[in-house]
Image (cartoon, rainbow, N blue to C red):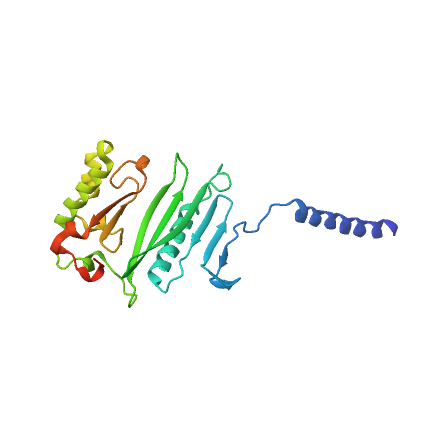
Length: 241
């Protein structure tokens, strides 16, 4: 009779120890990523822009959202985060924590009539160095309407002349270090080459990310083109001269 009682007790003790071992020493099945979204709020009397933070086993994300009513910028940053997550989704054996990095930041350039948000998107996915791209968003101050490159010029057909002016400016800036083939390709007559820009009171500044007109070592290249250089092509309503 004692043996019959002892066996169930032994089984219960064994089962309890087994479950305890799984809880304490078994594999961690939880999601290690830690997304944090800090919304724009009044903190200590100051407005704090929204920041998205997420750390996974092999990646980290930090994205700063500017304080603006423009959905274009929000959509761009959201899409960049989504694309990065697709990049890091496959299980990568042997990668250490933080192997992949996405860092999105911004600055604001103001002229008398236009605000331009310059959003820099830095991605590192291994190798000798990462890559930084730039996207710009320009808006009129009086009505918050989007300002495109086409808006700054009076008529269509300005790209060939603009291409030559910008090419000469890039060559002058880079001097003896200029790679002619890269400069000609990056300033060729395609509007996509000139979509990264911001406006000052008397000029348009064009931005070229690494590899666009020069090797990576040159970094991001910016050239300022005076409104006077562009002559009658420019719509002066967007400038203050």
